[in-house]
Image 1 (tube, rainbow, N blue to C red):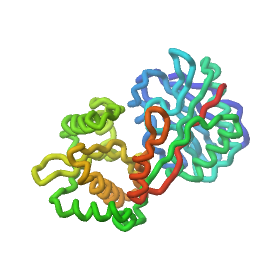
Image 2 (image 1 turned 90 degrees about the vertical axis):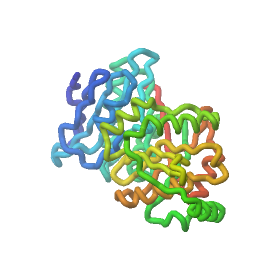
Image 3 (image 1 turned 60 degrees about the vertical axis):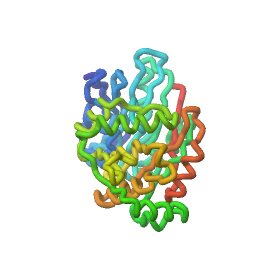
Length: 334
């Protein structure tokens, strides 16, 4: 592992940076974190992101407080054309920071990141941030710092979430509420499935996507199984089963932060389109989130491969009672 020298610091702050070879976990922070890290922004998860490149880990330290107050994982492009990314291969990256961290401190961390990338012949940095509902104040501080540094906002994705402080059924639109009542009289049941059934669940979800002419699942079965093994408490497989025992819907959800349950994959066959068992599955996700202490269920973005919004899916999330937020992607020529 290559350790960078400490960069010139401002009073009270210092940057620690280290690069780990491809396939090895990035360096952990030297001082305890002053915040609970998002799952995707932990060295253990970074090590499982199969991009085949080294990972540059940067930590902003407050030696006086004895805490790490911000962190940033960046993946340089070693094969060309020199487009460094955060994340390497995950739903989001970006800088996670302690509450109340001032802009000046964040600029120090970004100065170090950009300088390190230029030394590695990187010409561009792209940052796909977490949705602002994960940390509204932190997302706003990061966005302001990136704007001040000349980053361009290249993609703004609408992101919806359910808050567990609100009753799921009460906030459904009338049509969805009636449909859910019908579902509850069909004998369908919500279950938490064991990881043992992942191969069959994966094929079920792939088949649902094929018949709907959607893109294949973004991760291989082996990657999904590896994540369940590495983070068993943060991954859950929920299903809706018909009275016959057949699956009517399946969801893979991830506790992406201590307070957020992220709906990663969800699928249901076309033959049940009019019945809409996904309504019952979302209720199961909402209930599971409440039971595990999460304050919101992240329904994710709804962006087509073209980069345009999937308006029908966005409308469905609004009918579920989803609350809107944004997930922004930034880019800068270094």
